[in-house]
Amino acid sequence: MSALERIRGRRGGGTDINMAPLIDMIFILLIFFLVTTSFVQESGVTVERPSAESAVAPEKTNLIIGIDEHGRVHIRNEEVDIRAVRSRMEEFSETNPKGSVVIAADKKSTTDTLIRVLDACRLADVSNISVAARKPQ
Image: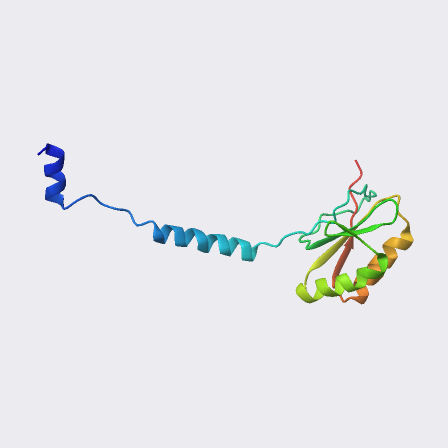
């Protein structure tokens, strides 16, 4: 019998570390971070925003509506007909009553499209709506 076997025999075997509580804590932390994190839903289109001296970064944004230079509206990576924007915003307002919407319109898009999207958001009871702009360089 070797010396190592004698030592193990006297102590009653090796010690084990129970990993179950550690794994439980990791899952609890993961769930906590997923529940408390708000995800921004991008529009799915790249726009060249107009510049404004008073442009500020919004505190919290839940949904970005994009209007490209041709006047096409994009919500959540898909092109949406202008007539369907109100129903989409009603669904958004039901799931996020205090959610905020940012309309990112390309500077070459028409004001008519921007106003129609803004009006659809207001008619759908979206409370926090803003129009995206960038600071001039």
